[in-house]
Amino acid sequence: MISIILPALNEGENLKKLIPKISKVLKKEKFEIIIIDDNSTDGTYKIVKKMEKDYNIKYILRTKEKGLSSAVIEGFKNAKGNILVVMDSDLSHPPEVIPELISKTKKNSDIVVASRYIEGGGVVKWPLPRKFISVFATFLAKPLVKVKDPLAGFFCLKRKVIENAVLNPIGFKILLEILVKGNHKKVSEIPYMFQKRYAGKSKADVHIYLQYNLHLLKLYFYKIKLFFKRVLK
Image 1 (tube, rainbow, N blue to C red):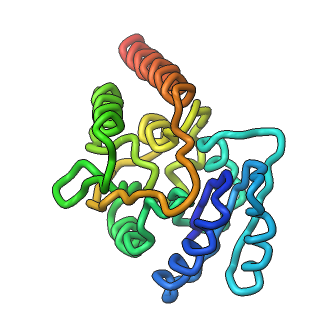
Image 2: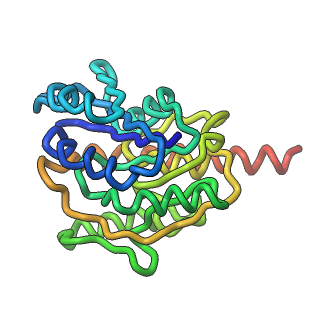
């Protein structure tokens, strides 16, 4: 089974369009859609409940905990699939890319990343400051992993990658946490065009960038600790 994991906060209007699109591109697969809702105030609950009769949806409402990374981990815990796909709920990640992610994962990859930063990939209509922040944030993460787009929010992985991994990320960049701490051998990337969100507002703000920097520090310390453990064995 394929588990599609969708963290959501006030993405009701986007989910109306996204869920049918996912269902269409995965019509040949057995799949479930897991929505982790961080107590949205836009009627997401009612929208999803209306769609449950037509689609295989598992809806999880969180009222005490918030954050994209922890929402994805909650999705992992509730997923039945052996292949897990993580994507945003705002239609910035085109569902048409999902079959290629799954196909490559089934063939010979433990993790497949939908990448903005390899040939054929890119970003649609981002203002220059946001492009700069994204490129600079990616640059800071490069020493940790050998992936062109380690901060991507759109990726696919086999369940075994996370089964024994202790994941405790801060902020939004769950993929970076998995790449550093997960049980994987082969990581692949495929290109895609990051789209402008369909409806609603971006969650990115100064607080998110501060969380990212703290997350980076934690991961660097983690890697250094592992290095010394190996050296001192």
